Length: 329
Image (cartoon, rainbow, N blue to C red; front, side, top):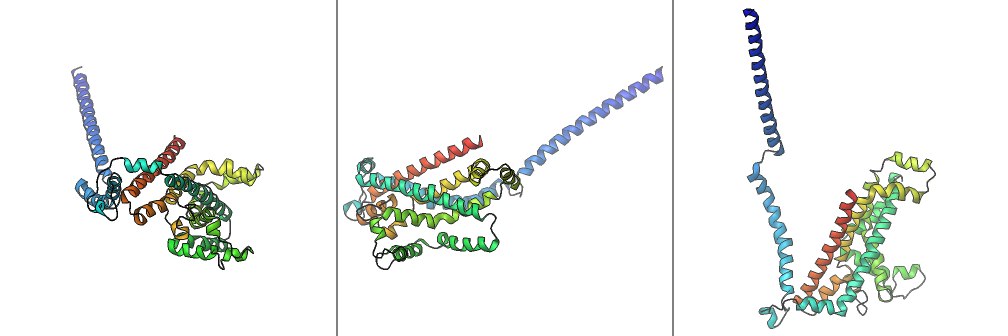
């Protein structure tokens, strides 16, 4: 009937209107959602200009104190710049001569090997093992015991390098040194007879606090239920650490190893104890660079060595970062 047709038509019109309104509503909601998403990314409402304004001072500081010195070191490394004399006033560009001379220098090869031994012994093995061991043993210790141990370990990391070096010089001294008295070997010149072993022990003691704090925080993320399951399964302490703890801490181990390795490779504190002696037996790279620059006055040559040390640090960092990315993948 006509009425029915009108009703159908009306309903159709209403349906179309409804669909149209729904479509418009969805479009509007979609646009609103996108708009809110775009605004939501700027959580504090600063805008691009103000955000850049906040970042620029930090970038300027990084450029002035990090980027510029690195570039300046690279430039000096390709010159014959001297601390005194004609080359100090008018340095001449010599290209890669300083780099090739450093690579052929027996002192540089000796220092490179000693630096690798210093990093491996005191950082990769010493600080890592002792830091994790202390963190593992203290995880269930009473607060009084834990705070007491931390009170003995933390000052070694907090105190300035010259202060710590003076204390250890007193411990290792030939005349009335504490270590010689305790071991019943007075008169033993530890820094002369065993220079690298003394430096490795010194740096292990000094830097363990950082590793201990990092591993203590990392162990707090291991679910106690996993440790309890391993205990009920009859796993020994070493098996629990190997099969339950280490898989969860691998990223922390890599990060800690990277940081302490770079810090140790660039540490100048050994100069305060042995000054690189005796007979270059403890002359790690930072000490050799210092002596070439300020004692011999060969700033260009020392800068070339610094650049080579920088490249070595970058290689080590890239290896660790690659291992870390491989673990996450």
